[in-house]
Image (tube, rainbow, N blue to C red):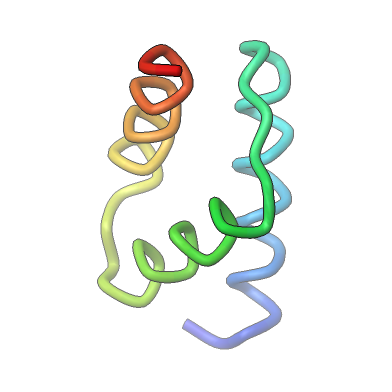
Length: 56
């Protein structure tokens, strides 16, 4: 996956999470890039951030 596609995916994930009331920061963006580099599914990534936000 090229870098532009990753940026697009990150923005889509950010929008999806924002609609669920989950906010992400720069550290979270790094984590998203790690997930995308490992070809994790977007659903797995979204679930990760939803559970992370609920833990705080």
